[in-house]
Image 1 (cartoon, rainbow, N blue to C red):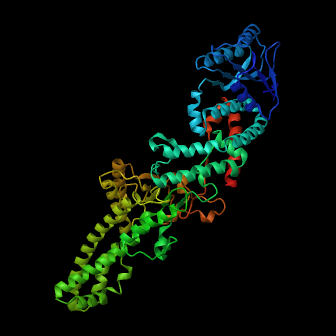
Image 2: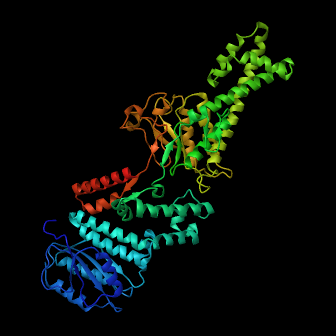
Image 3: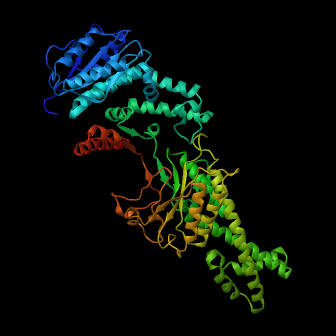
Length: 592
C-alpha cells in the first residue's frame, strides 16, 4: 500500500508496563528500530502500529482510557494505518474487552487491522495451552512467540515481505538459542511419562505403538533428529516457514538419511535371489516361498527407508510361484497315478514319469495343460497312450485343485504376515501396498482371486486387515467391461472393497495414466501406494518412464488456506504468494 511506513510505531498508554509485559515487548522488538509513544497528541498517517496495553488487577489503565477518548473524538487521526494489539493483565477477565474497545475505536479513526490482531496475556496464560502444546514449549514461551508473530504480521501486511523476512530470520535465531534446552527436554518428558492416549506426539503415527519400548525409543530418536534438523541443518528461512506453519516438511527426522518410498520390482529379486544384509536368499520354488520372500523384501526395504513399500505388479510377480507349484503338483499326481494303476514301485513310477515329463515340463503353464496331454501321448508307444491319457487327466485336475488351495494359504499368510511382522527395530509393521488386476494369465488370475478371498475372510478373529493397502488396476479391454478376461476379478474386487475397504481402484485409462500405457507391459502401468505416491513420468529421460524401482525422495506441503487468507481476495496476489512459497520449497527440497 502506497504511503505506509515500513517502520513500526509502538503506542503504550499509561505508566510503566508490568515486568512480564515489558519482557515480552522487549523480546518481540529485539533487533528492530521502533518509535515508542506513550500518548497520541496529533494525527498519525500511514503507520504500522502496535498498541500495547498493560492493565492492573482491576482491569484499569487510565492512559488507556485517555487513548480511547482521543481516538473517539478525532476521526481519521489514524488514516491509512495498519494496527495490531497486545493486552497484558494479571487477571483473566478484562483483556478481551480492552482489546475489543481499542480495535473498534482505532478502526473508526481510520486504522485497519491485520488478521487475528489481538494477543492477550491473561494472568495464568492458559489461553496459550494449545499453542504451547503444538510448539512443544512452555506457556510463557508461547506468549513470546505469539507476540513476535503479531509484530511479524503487521510488518508483512500489504507487501513488506522483505522487511519482515529479515526480522523473521533474526527472531528465529534468537528463538533457537532461547529454547535450545527447554523444548526438547519437555518433549522427552512427554514421551517418557505420558501414555499414548494422552500424548499427541506418541500418536502422530498410527502405525507405531508409542507405549512399547521400541516405539518409545523410536520417538526419542525421531524428536531429537527433528530438533537437530530445525536448528542446525535446515536453511533458516525454510526452518522458520515450517515452524510458522507456512510449509510442512514431511519426515523431518529422516531429513539427512534416506528416501521415502519405493515400488519394489519383485521379479528380478525372485529370479536371482537377494540379500537382506544377513545372508543370501536363493530363488523361491513354490507359491508359499514367493509369498514369504515378498514379505521379507518389503520388510527389509522398510528398514532402509522412512516411507512405505509397494509392489507395482503383484499378480505378475507371484504368477511364477503358482506356475512352479502347479508343475510340482502335476508331476506328483501323475507319478502317483502311474504307480497305483500299474503296480510299479516308487522308483519305477518316478523313472517312467520322468521320461515322459522331462521334455515338456519346464515350459508347462496352467493354460497349456490340454496341449501338454496331447504332446505326452505322442512321446509314448501305442500301448501306453491310454495310461498317459488317464494319468494326465487325473494329474491336471489334482494339480489345479491343490495349487489353488496352496495359493489361498500363501495369500492368507501374506496378509497375516504383513499385519504382524515387525520392522524398524520392532516399532511398527511395514507400511505396505500391492497393485494388481491386469495379469490375464491363469496363474496371475489365481493369485488375485485368492488374495481377494483371503482379504474377505479377514484376520484371525475376522478383523479387517490394515495392510497391505491394495490397489486394483482398472483397464478397458482387460477387466473393466463385461467380456474382458479379468472382468470377473473386477466384480470380485468391488465386492471385497464393500466388505473390507480394500482394494482401492486406479484407472489406467485416465488421460494422465493412459499416455504411458503399453499393452502387456506391467512396467508402463501406473502404480500407487497407500501413502498416495504415484511416480512414472521422467522429464530427465523420457525413455525411462517406468514404474518399477520408482518412488519419491521426499515431499513438502504448502499451507494454501493461509495464502488464500493473506491474499484477501486478490487472485494475482495469491499466485504471487504461491510462487514465493514454491521457490522456497524448491530450494528446501534441493537442499534435502
